[in-house]
Length: 144
Image (cartoon, rainbow, N blue to C red; front, top):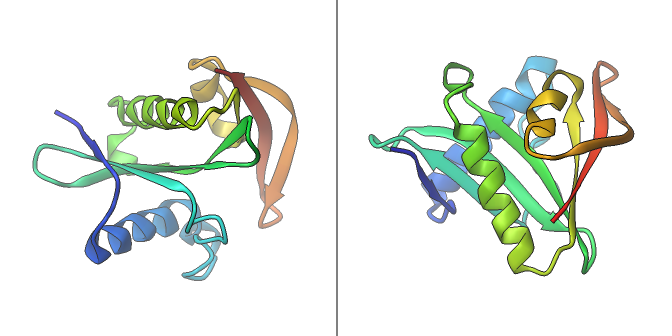
């Protein structure tokens, strides 16, 4: 059974940011610290763990304005992909966005995972950034 929670202790936060760095930054030789940004202090952070407490995946939501929320930094351990971890994270982040009054959610999806987000009703609305000169993204949106 998957358990979803907010990271609260210093150890949980360290583990959260370590997963974020290992999956989203380290493969492109980005330094530790590059996995964090100025919105982390005001954002909602979500973790998914298995019944043994192993951290399987993470995600973050912040508000861009009163009506628009943004999902960032979704990451799942490689050996846990395809097991429903991402679905649980998306559902929780959408629930949090709705509770905060957002009417839509935007995100920048790496091109290799656009199909994942499309399965949850997100549509490509344009090109997104290219990170590290290599990782192309598509800007996506979904109305709540």
